[in-house]
Picture 1: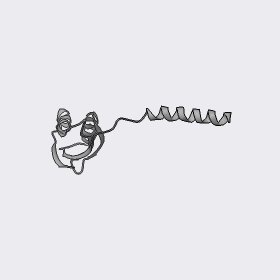
Picture 2: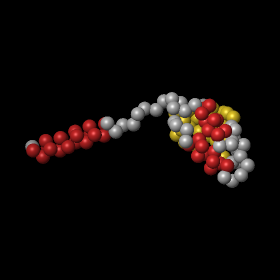
Picture 3: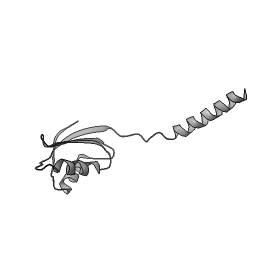
Length: 100
């Protein structure tokens, strides 16, 4: 009986500890594909890093061949204007090719 009580107490305390560790909810996740002019092998790396620095960006995929950057982001933390500004700030002015 004593073991059951101890096991229950330990389980309840662990459950309480993990319940407080749940991350905050995200806003709606959106995706946008930006047309980005790139001309060298290091351009995709620079574009990707600039977009990843924008608060709310969840994922970035850059294609040199297609001249695009597809960004998945939290729309409560990031805006398309902030994304295009981030690429422009590093010398790659971009325009929206498509968005979801």
